[in-house]
Image 1 (tube, one colour):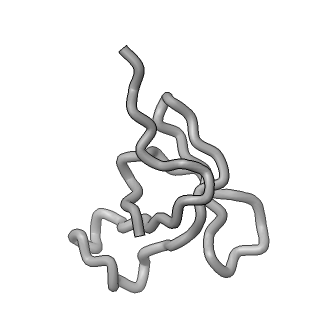
Image 2: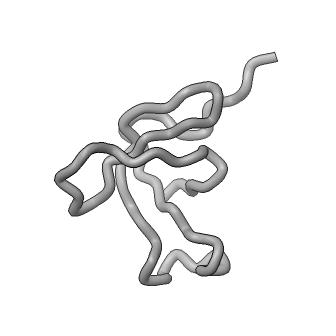
Length: 65
């Protein structure tokens, strides 16, 4: 049984840290664009305003923006 890939390259996403309690307006939220994903749940995101490389997240840590 294959896993459904939740986020695809080019999708806009937001990381909401646990201490933000689901608030997308929290100062520590990070927004960006998916660059790479995998069926194993690893997602790499180019964060807005970050000139460096993409940052890795688990798919369940991200929400569509």
